[in-house]
Length: 206
Ligand SMILES: [Zn+2]
Image (cartoon, rainbow, N blue to C red; front, side, top):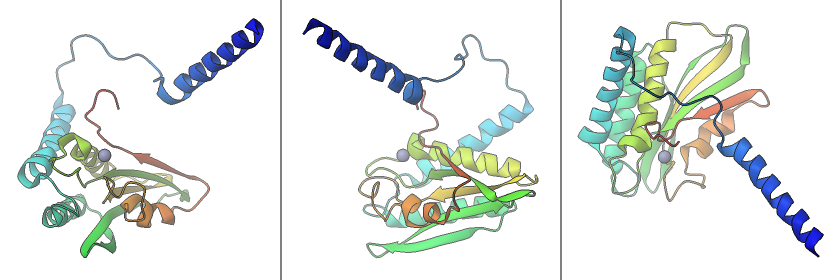
């Protein structure tokens, strides 16, 4: 009886430890101490991130199909213009939800040597109802736009696809209306593709 209890407890602890290691543990060490002074590049990135947050979260604010469809469309238009200004041809993946025209916005750098291997770098641009979504997820959009600008003049071996997704938030999270499900994800050629989705990029704990 006691042995059985010990074995069960040991198994539970082992499973918890493996789950922590594989799902929560972050490799390396967090930086501590004074931050170094920002150099020119870092200052430029900081300014870019601020500009995106200021426009999408403050100027436009809440944006979603159910409450603020007009603002959702404004955000999409602005993000599309940002991708275009960085030198990309923007592919719109349009579909309709509750009478609202929704769209993912996608740009791509075709890989030079392994174009069939695709790295998707994405972020959703809709917001939770009642919030301006500065962190969730304007921060993610700001991050992928900054990356897209820096990659725009480079050739990469693999294909890199930057995608601003629509309808990630409730009530669409697990439904076909979710931009990640509705179009882009379905178009990923398997098996050698990788998706990196940034959400709440400004959070310390995400
Ligand atoms: Zn989110």
